[in-house]
Length: 338
Image 1 (cartoon, rainbow, N blue to C red):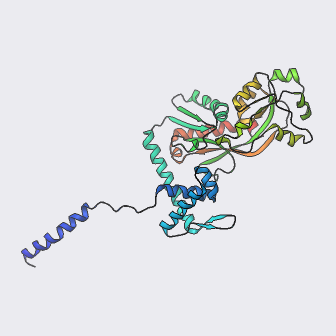
Image 2 (cartoon, rainbow, N blue to C red):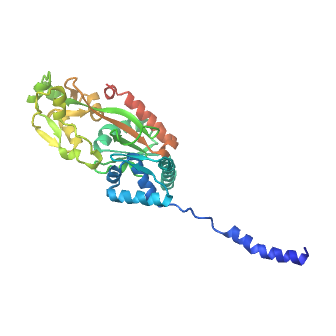
């Protein structure tokens, strides 16, 4: 080939080569992020009804999202049976990828939003859980680690507070939240005991059995407490305690009711009556002698409390150090494990 021919050949291929170098990278053709998030929730529950409840949308909306996703991917993700559902092989493969991807995205968002703060720990739970259980443990930890900053977020109305991007650790109740693993650690069972102040016991006791409580001032949580969005599980009442320990006795009419468990505990400490003491809520007043267990007749609800640790939080030494402390502190409270 002549020199002129080489130049012509070079001129012909240069524009194409330049175009290839400067061409923007090919975009990923993916369904919407919302479709993947909806699929993850539906796959977790294996129920469009429960997924709709968690996401606060209609069941029809969930079905539409899933049908659209299946159409985009050209495959079936769920096997729909008469009274149940299960994931197909493709659905199981997608769930693993979606969970991993959303966790990484959540971690990245949190890191961008927090600017790499290595001193703050954010916990969430119910009002009673934060004030009666978590706060005393946090106070004890801060006494030895004053450089660590804490944010405690409490709500009885927002069940999705645990999913707030700022939250590192959530204390949750129930057996249905998700599978136990690196992110969800069982802490203790939910157990209640009749408790009152020492002065009240001295003035109105002794109480030798359930029948003696018929002459006591019974105080109880109002049903409104149990209807809160973040506490939406079966209520535990005096009627349940009497049914378990003395089925022939009807629970007395409460002398005082409130939807605030903190107020109920303070009323008991003030010597105004007898309450059902959730052990993780009253362990500190019991240790301090402000409350006493009347007799050894506990009631186990069958539920458990868990520590939910966000994936990004597992990579932060100051958070994992506090988690280790929290577990050790809980193990050191004997009444939580009786």
